[in-house]
Image 1 (cartoon, rainbow, N blue to C red):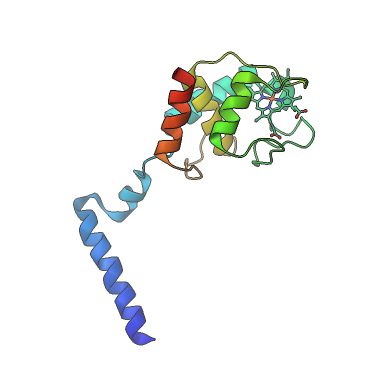
Image 2 (cartoon, protein in one colour):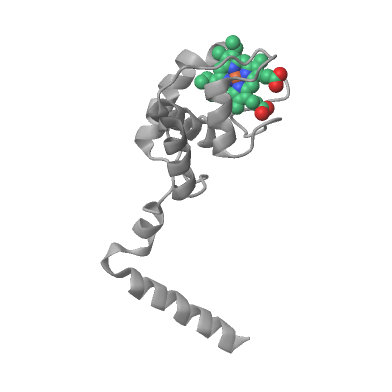
Length: 139
Ligand code: HEC
């Protein structure tokens, strides 16, 4: 038991050494694939001018969906969200919304940050996925 704790401590020390001058905390913040504060800020504006009329200021006005809390009936991944925003949901009240790729990226960032412009964007998946969403829109 004691030995295990010591080993874990040593491992942590090695990781800290490996991070070098950057420091562990900063390394964590730099983690790639999280949406940036700029994305979230842009998304805040996109949401209030394009989505809030139907989804409400708190994202829970459409029954069964709570965008702020991440409760979706049809979407789960960022790709799903991007597709739904761009194409709408045919036969429902969700229209296609004509947005540029960075605007879609921003509004997804805003949704994933829990509608909190001041939130640290820590809930997000990975860089490859974000990139794929972006490229899918651009292509
Ligand atoms: C004209 C009203 C309207 C606007 C504007 C609108 N939506 Fe919707 N949206 C709806 C409705 C209604 C649904 C539910 C459709 C259904 O499943 O019956 C929906 C569904 C969705 C879903 C799927 C939710 C789930 O439970 O899976 C997402 C995600 C979504 N909207 C995001 C957005 C975003 C982001 C915007 C702004 C860029 C937006 N919507 C603008 C009416 C709207």
